[in-house]
Length: 368
Image (cartoon, rainbow, N blue to C red; front, side, top):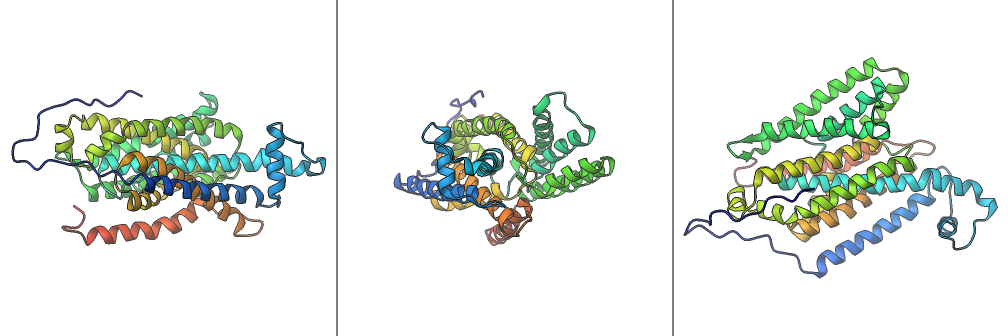
């Protein structure tokens, strides 16, 4: 990933108020929050591994991990537990971790480059666009790129939706929040119609898979899927961290950022590309899971402030923890049944989104 151009241009005019970067939080605060989230993540991971259709004790889990590391052996009486752990639960937990981190960091980037708190891959239609690409592959049985075909199609769909939202919301060198949200509504509606058309064209098996994408689920996670999503997520998070300084400068306003040497349009294009990669990787194998990228960045920002370096790191861990807990609830709340994980995240994110709109509308001038 090439770095964003960062060069000194003209200085602010005399008399102009000098911009200031967002203050860095006290050192102990992000470390403490990250530690707490890691503890929550560890507890959620253990609970996810031991709970399900088959109850597996924590001792069996740790014994199985130890056996893989060459420490101890597994009791032959626990062969079924061993198989369930390594073929079903470990890949599912791993997929939840990377998908949650990808969606959360994508939300941080979108809010940073669009400069508003409502930008989120699901709200402005990026997830729906990626789902259209993935569903097209399913219905027409495309496999030109092997296991990467689904991800590439989702990437193209997500990138197209992102660019459409970006181009439509930009007016006179600024991004209009209302236009952005309305564009997201329109994109989601069009993508919903396209998915309905694909459902009509597909056979019974394709229809069942498309329903999975619309509701969001981590059921059927495999190591091969984790091997595709994990490198894309790690690359996207590292690239996002490389943009943290420029995003901090952009939060001062486009004019100030340009004075300080940030090529704003180049920064936006790179950030949008990273968002498309992260979102497509998550949607390709997890379906449409909305509001993770909306709720987590806001909660973290309330504690740590707007500085993007810690915001990206802590949001990645928080997104993993949220999605892992949501997945655990999805498969344990109802006996012998599994709830759509997208439904659970929407139950949390929907009221949060409503609260953000009410909060913004009470501000000076409301949403403009």
